[in-house]
Image (cartoon, rainbow, N blue to C red):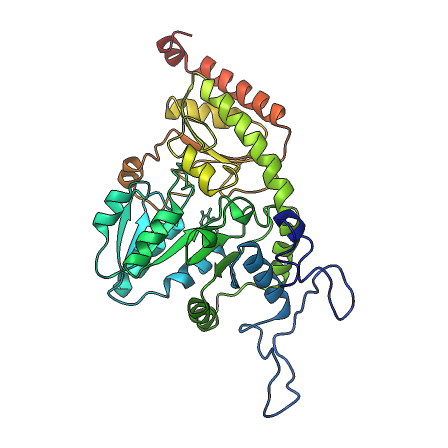
Length: 398
Ligand SMILES: *Cc1c(COP(=O)(O)O)cnc(C)c1O
């Protein structure tokens, strides 16, 4: 870990323990396809034996993410969901999880429809309300699961305070750090126990790979998770590990640029008469603004906005040109998603409405396009909505 402590984050994205392959001098991590390894000694096996347990390419990614998150051990999985699901296997029958109420839809599905069958109890909670959270803690609460900023309402919860609370009652704190990445937020330094990622998003950044990561600091949790990674076996393939490693090199510049544009777009949208509300922790009027700036270096590149009605949303989506209309986020191209029918489709409508994920809410993950081009595109699509929904424009006196 010689490079880890000396340099800043952006330099360490490039100059880390895996910048040069010691065998050949190659400046790109070699993709090691072997599924098994010859053992030279009957009594003393080498470091690698079988690729599910460990292989050098995946290991390079695991060590890199561990260093970037300031943890001790990283684990790479075949998807964000397999990282999250494997981490949940730290729980046993009879345990209880407290979980962010507007958590990623796939996590919601895992907890409510799978873990529940194995006798693991759960309670959804607004993680921004610490008093409520404390009241909901039970004697069998073993994990507090945070997503901050949350998805898709970008609510900010206090990682340090929640981790402290969890420690007091002997529970672990899991943080899904997909939205901000260690470039902006390092949950382990704030007391969290397990950091989870869908590396499919910003870490890889190019909409071309599915991957998940987990990082821990504590040795005994690391041992348990290593055991589970091998036992459950949802590991990341070597080609995909390489793609994530490549994406990571530009993480800082991508996120920095996208975040600048996100701030501009959020400010612009907030002023538009057809936009009811903008959710972005970088806006000074956001509830979590101060906390966000205390615990993270920035607000990221994802924002959500609620349009005047579902009709306006439909018109906007059919007229907007630049962003792709798709699930996912965190890519070089801007991605516009419809949480009600995409990330949160697994959540019943009633539950969605309760959480504020209405049918007129859109989520935007800002990519690397010129921000003025994006704003121009949005203005044109919103203007078109005004023309198509004249009753609304009359209502608003425009
Ligand atoms: C996409 C996503 C996941 C799931 O990750 P996959 O790589 O799609 O399995 C989990 N959490 C968040 C916040 C996500 O955006």
